[in-house]
Length: 88
Image 1 (cartoon, rainbow, N blue to C red):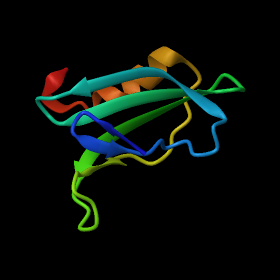
Image 2: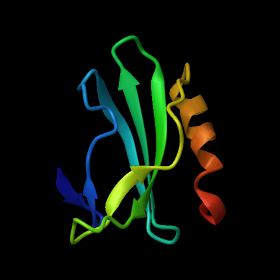
Image 3: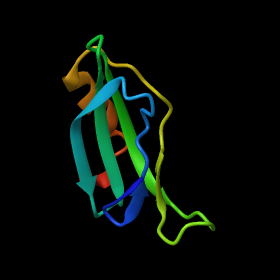
């Protein structure tokens, strides 16, 4: 766990089999858009939102979407557009 953009960050890919290839924080909508790439080349896009946890002092970054696999980086970015809200 670490502090990131005012919240507690716990990686969505706990097993370490994927690496972060894109990370974008959008302060206007308080979202963190992250794209992981798996060893097999597939991309995993996640939109994270801040959620309060009564046991923690800071909010925690929580995935807003279910796990989705995309064949290309561009398709993963396109998938995240719907979660970016009015930012795009």
